[in-house]
Length: 127
Image 1 (cartoon, rainbow, N blue to C red):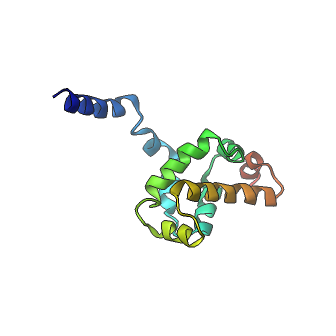
Image 2: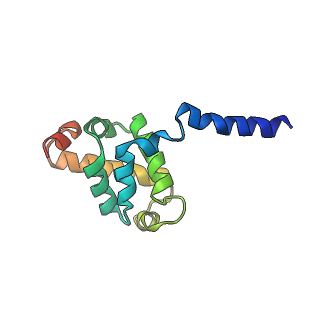
Image 3: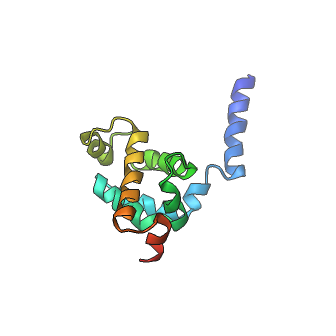
């Protein structure tokens, strides 16, 4: 009896603390949701247009928390676990795991910034 009560209580606490609703209220996540890219290039373009300069600067660090948190959002919302078009496109590029797929997308943004000769934090501000 205690088990179901704990599960219900835990579920009720999420909205109270903002953990469940925070990404939905963030305008960056709203813009990412609108992209719904079907391939690698479209996903990198969407991230390139949408990510905040402060987040872009952190993407160059492989263990940065921003890669984890935005990556989890991408996995859950762009179909990387449900077999969506982006999942199929990334599989055709040789990626099997959703976390590796998001890392490749973030690395694409970092590579684009480096190719433009700008630090990631500066490239968004200069547009």
